[in-house]
Image (cartoon, rainbow, N blue to C red; front, side):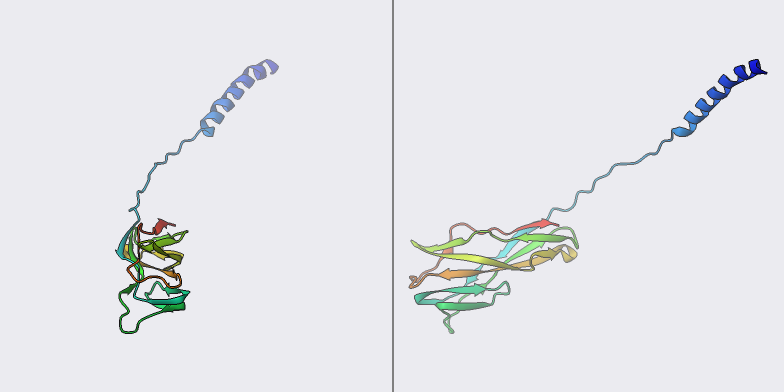
Length: 171
């Protein structure tokens, strides 16, 4: 019996090894894919304009809201009969429908000049803020700011030599 057992044990071990190997290895398959989304874009539709103003010997500001409303402080006043064009900057943002995006407004002031006379524009605000949603793939983004008017600024049209940048990115 011992001789028969010695002959059968290696056969049983071999069967276990073969059977164990057959059940230990299985294979599954997967595919790889990528989706390229429509790029987000921003286009200026209206430039910012603080309108007509007067200034006396006291410095002041004009605060222009993203809705194109404005208030004056200090020595700045508005002329009721001749306000001029008053508009917040306006942009059209387009991209993937219903996607959200972040808005980055200028981090530094923009200088507007008339000859050698300068004013600064800062304290940027926007609607929407700080994020927007591309309902149907588009949204209007309006930007307001504060114009800092030095005392006794000379008359003339003040404009920026370089535009200010507004950046949008998908969230």
